[in-house]
Image (cartoon, rainbow, N blue to C red; front, side, top):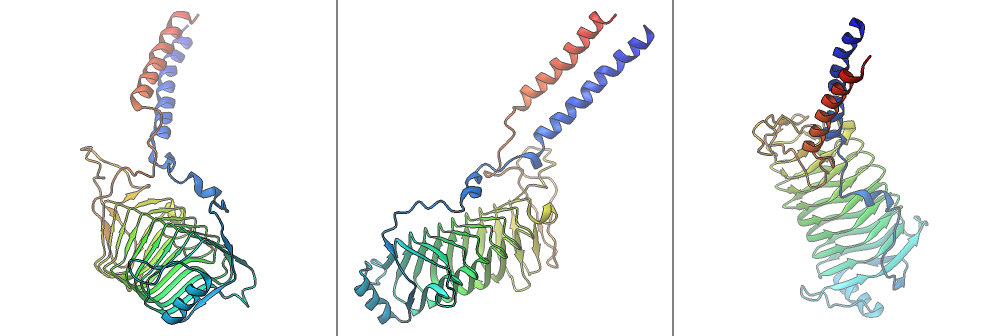
Length: 348
């Protein structure tokens, strides 16, 4: 009987320990699953556009050439700001990179244009812009490119919006660009860097997804750019690398999850870059005053010796635990006291 009584004393202790461990596992932020990215794994590739034309590569070398080809090929628009020339609904698929190095190449132009709703497969470059300003690249799918999905250099006033760049060597590269909006793009599973932004200024990088890229999600060299509300997820190295030539960039309200094997998720080797209000999935507590801000700054790797002074405890990209804490706590109490009562009354 004494032995049984001793066992009775240890049973509730064991129940409490097991329950606390279960509670910790369920509520731990590292076990939360991203809620807005389930479709990323199925993008290899779901083609949803109405393909109106199957085309070979496009090469445009001047304003005059652009307008001439638009007239010959029936592209709508006249090149003005109100009525840009539209290259749209094309399907270009080639593995002959020695003959099709660029699927769409535009250079030395200033007319307003759009490249939209196209599917580009193969080649060494999907879209290549050089000294081609006033362009919008919108809602395209680019894949299986042996070089870079989208490359833009030495231009201004560009908008790169809602594109899917997947399974290329590099996703996108922007060199010496001023005044660009790069928004709502999905840069997914590219073999090396997701996006390189080099010597660019006054760019808005907004609401993009950098997912499972082979090196960095985003490699940034530039100044006075704004990164806001982007998702950096499962990139092999840092989600964001601010290189030595990065100055006065602002990084705010972004989400960093499981980059660089959940070691340091960002590296800052630049000067005077500003971080605030970002979500780091390996840095979500303590928040003793429940203001949604982690009480301890997030320290960022690199020679910039930077911190995020206001890391946030939650992100719209991350689901909260589906099992309510109050229900779980009540269940644990019922388990502990109910089990203990039954043991006391029915133990021989």
